[in-house]
Length: 368
Picture 1 (cartoon, helix red, strand yellow):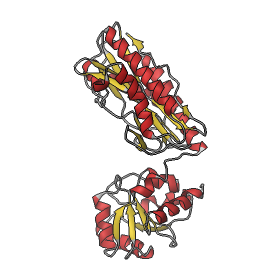
Picture 2: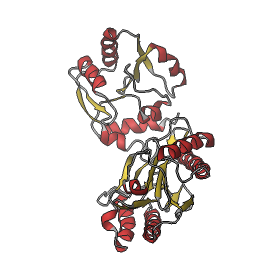
Picture 3: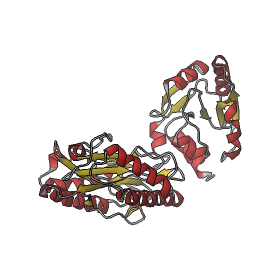
Picture 4: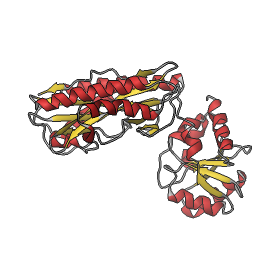
């Protein structure tokens, strides 16, 4: 393991007044330990309360995973009888001396079940959100992490090109999504994709977060394709738009505007500028073209071990970008009831600017 990760976390905890931190399965636990656990009916809890040794509560059947941990973890295991779980969690909390401590939790990850166990096991502890400390832990990627994301982008691009060969008029959105999912796996993505691909055709393409349906692709459709791949635990997140046969001339116009906005947003990233400036640069292009009301979401979001993480690229965000931050640039124009275009790329802030990790052409893709 890179020992800086754990020491960095302890520094962030101290700076934010946290005596301890409790994590359950998710990217942060994996980032620190190298171990992967699924959220399920059996609780798994990592307890970090320096100077006490790191503690983990987990089912007996998963204890073998600890041999692969990046640092030593003191295990507290339990069997299948839920009646005995509270005693094990209580022992782990006592070993970590949580009583009276200010304990940070991951607010978007920790479930009510685990919180109940913790509150019963350490009733004198003060459980709070650890969001501020945790947001800063993974926000800047090292070279190895960026390389994994670059590889994830290349895999995603190959999968898209293979899918494109299969697209035909009359296929349903779900059929196209299935072809893309299979192509991503064949191209080398890890089995657990970052998210289920979005295939949105015709009027559905005007809905930024459409869910693939049984609607069949028809001549004249725009088709928004939003997808990603996973490599070494890191994600890509891309969007391109297809034109099925001949499409409305205005669709070609908005595709050109969105491509220009995408280029402006990508060019705006550099150390020291704000996340909001990236949004403003992309949005200015769309506004100048007269489509401001049809760009209905932020320009992008952070990307890494999660598809949505810090930093978030919205106009008012004063967070300053720094080397190693990774995010998407994904402007769009959505004409209600008619169709939409979105173009999304993945970015990594460098010492002097920002590198685009994805390289697929950004014009409308022709499909028949």
